[in-house]
Length: 463
Ligand code: ARG
Image (tube, rainbow, N blue to C red):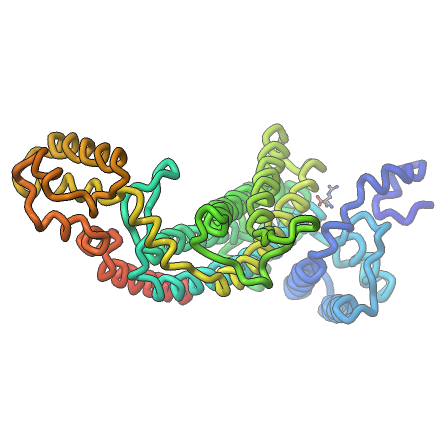
């Protein structure tokens, strides 16, 4: 006779291939702590509500704690032939306690158990990820503080466009990452309702206290609808979205670091500890870390698609398809945490080549808008000023000059409004320091921005 919990209904052993196919312990085993925590709260509630005796409740809770410390210490290892982590722990409890252990599953199904465990597990994963994101934010703020005067070109279409500072550029990512924290928080807040007590799908005839377990497990409340409790995985999708966006931000940043480290840019250089060499070309120093982050973003986006596609055709309530939620969302979190843990020290140790940044800013006519604005400030309509500046740029390109080195006669030939002070107006430093509009790159503005970011971060951390 099979030792499966549900064997009574069957007259044959399940095919071995099906057993292996069906089993999820290889990837849900990581939830053992959360499974045991949920079971302890359930057993406690069963005892307090008089559904099992106080003695049985106590014995079950102690038995579960014993299993927890034995798994933690390595004394007990997971049986990889078990159907899943929930079955494994209950079987172990029964092995240890006999009949008493079998009482734990009163008024509970694996359907509400798994919905609970995944929520508990993901709540921890989201908290760990959030901590890493805030650590990255702090790292970037420190970098920004060093570079409020480091002029570099800002780009559109990857063409040099207007002057900014490295601090301003880095701070753009700080705000993206702040929103990433907010998205994780939003998803966790919505997820933080307890499905336990939904049972298989239709609740139970026992007089359970769902509020008691919800509270014991740190949830805001018990979920309102037992069908919903066991059958949605929208929280996995929402968290998957939040993680995909973190990866997207890391990936864009990585792409920039890759460019900055190229011989063509040389804006930055990675520490040797965060770069790799080539097997054949001795001159190479490759930014593998950033390339892997860019690559792994595709994998995390794939996880999100897996979740969405898995859910879209499922009738209520539980379907086995839903077992596929775990590998996808767990992988997304494992990947983003791994990427953050590598990206943070890589950024901390990256050297910034201020001279190269400044030289690139000086060579690309990124002060052309400022030249046009100079004429506007002297009364010319912007579109006329734009055209004149275009002709000046063309003349510079023709003669191998820059707007800074073009003689005043050339300026005057196109407009009498030009006088000697044009050179100050178009100097790189003026171009940056005059961009004082709120959110702009002027050093005094970026310093304010950094302060605001520090306050926003303190608020996030206080939550
Ligand atoms: N390992 C399963 C999962 O992750 C547990 C739920 C099984 N429930 C069931 N009714 N067969 O989804």
